[in-house]
Amino acid sequence: MLGIGELSRKTGVRIETIRYYERIGLLAPPARTAGNYRRYRETDAGRLRFIRGARALGFPIDRIGTLLALADQRDRSCEDVDAIARDHLDEIDRKIADLTALRRELASMVDACSSRSIARCRILGALASDR
Image 1: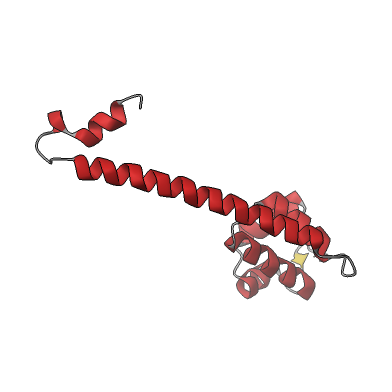
Image 2 (image 1 turned 180 degrees about the horizontal axis):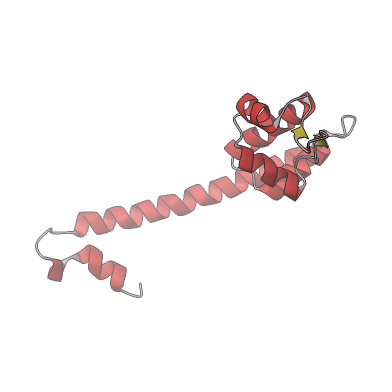
């Protein structure tokens, strides 16, 4: 059994985040000692590593909860997991497209800047316009 500090060190997840995951149900409430200290199992550490890995890939919390529930059903087809991952990949592609368009627009503004005076600054003018 692990205390919350040990669990945090072992998984690289901050103590406040562990408590948050407990509150929202991603991590089951731990056993408590007679002094009311939290005691965690190795399976909790594995679950936190899973959550941390999913967060690193940008999965939102609600999807992580779904993935965890699916991971607990070992004999089930991974079709639903695949669908979740594909949806997330599509969202990442949309974000990349949006960022690419933003980059193109900002680069155009920077290229148009003559660096003369603030009064003639095309960047500030573009930001102030309704576009």
